Length: 390
Image (cartoon, rainbow, N blue to C red; front, side, top):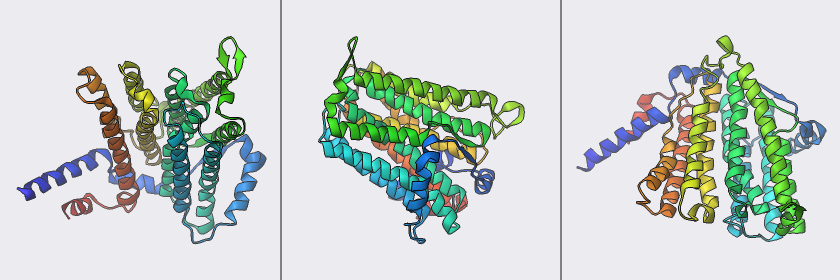
C-alpha cells in the first residue's frame, strides 16, 4: 500500500513538473545561448549611482559569487520589510521612526547589491544567462516588498482600495517592462525607471521617519490629503510609463510581421497578466467581510507571488525565445479563493488565504528551483525521474 501511494505521489510530482516547470531541449539550448541586451537611459544612474556602484564593487572580494550578492540583497530587503510589517500589518498603524529608517536602508542595500551583481559577474568572468535569470527572479519577488513599504509609510490601508490599487499598478508596470522585452529582445530603461522609483520609495520612508506617519494626512484642500496627491501623481507617472511600454509592444516587435522574438502574437502575454490581476480584484471586491483589509499584508504577499511567477515565466520565454505558456498551476491559489466565495464561504476565508499564500509561494519556489538547478544543469527527464524515485 505504501509503495503504491509513493509511486502515485512520484507520478503526480513528475506530471506537475513536466507541465509547470521543465523546459524542452530546444528551449534549454536557446536559454544557454541567450545574450543580455539592455539600453540604460536612467537619469539617476548617469548622474551619480553608477559612480557609487563602481566604488562598491571594488570592496567585494573576488570569491563572492554574483548570485550570492543578489540573494543577500533580497534577504536584507525581505527582513526589513517584515520588521516594518510587524508594526503596520494592516497598513493603517503607525510604526516607530526607526522601523521606516531600517526599511529604507534595506531597500537601498538591495538596490546597490542588485546593481553590482552583474559587475561582479563580468569582473570574475562568470556571466551567464542563468545569472541574469536569477537577478530578474529576485527583482520580481522584491516588487511586492517595495510596494508594501509605500503602503506602510502612508497608511494606505485607510484609503479605500489603496493598497490593492498601488500593488496592481506596480505589478502591471514590472510585467509590461518584460512584456516589451519579449517583443523587442532588449530591456530598455527610460529616464525615470527602476532606480528613480526605488529612490522615491526610500525618500518616502525617510520623510515618514522624520516627520511621522501622520504627515501624510495633512490636508491640501477639497477633502484630500498629502497622501492622495502623492498617489495621484504616482498613478499619472505609472500610466505614462505603461503607455510607453504599450507603444513599444505594438510597434517594436522584431519577429515576423512585428511579432515577438519567439514569432508569437504580441498580445499573447496579456492573458497571464489578466489571470494575475482580475482574480485578486474580484476576490477583494466581492468579500462580505474585512478579512482582506485586516490581513492586507498577507493578501498582498499572495498577489505578489502570483505576479512574480507570471513575470518569471515571461522572462524565461524571452530568454529562450519560446512561446509563452498561458496556463500556470499557481492560478489555483486565487481561483480557490474565488470558488470559496461562489459557494458561500464553505471554508473560512482567513484560513484559505493562508493556504493559498503558502501554496503560491511553494509553486513559485518549486518553479524557480527547477529552472535554476535542474534545467540549468541541462539534466534530462530521466535524471528527474531518478530523483523522484529516490
